[in-house]
Image (cartoon, rainbow, N blue to C red; front, side, top):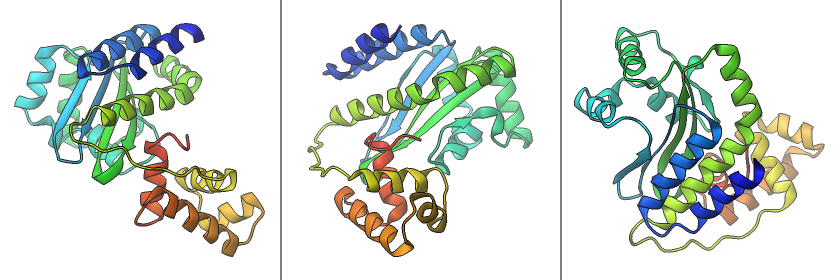
Length: 237
């Protein structure tokens, strides 16, 4: 199983055009045995791109009905850094419930899991899986595969950025183990005091680590640094 996943990811790494992303996502969807898998991104220039396994009729309906404005997955993930189980989003509004019913009727599935990704210069992407099964089955699936799916999502985003027209490679400096630890704990929601306590360091020392990581990542502030570290796969939460 691991060898097969490595083969798929190797093919993704070798991709030199967007069609290869579509082939890779279809292979990953089959590998994980889920109904659908989708990658959607907004480039630094505002251009949108997507690949995935939804039926064309659903994609067209989503655009026609302007579901982007009421989709809790989009709004919920935009406010988060960490993966999101769709059940834990706010589906309480009438518009959201109508959208959910329509999506299920079009084969999207009653379960979903999305990984938000933030890249350089305002790039935002979502890597999502959806399936039709019980809550217990889905909870077991996401718990088992969560870590690998985060890595797969960042593989996709890295390749999408590589293929973005006119993009120049960004120089990067490696973060130290302590800087990675600090960024990871901040990404999962720890306060600075909690991070310092967990790492058994003073808040002054923690501030040095954070500022160093921010400089290396070319980030404007701590939140931006965490987003960049996640987008580049430097940290995984």
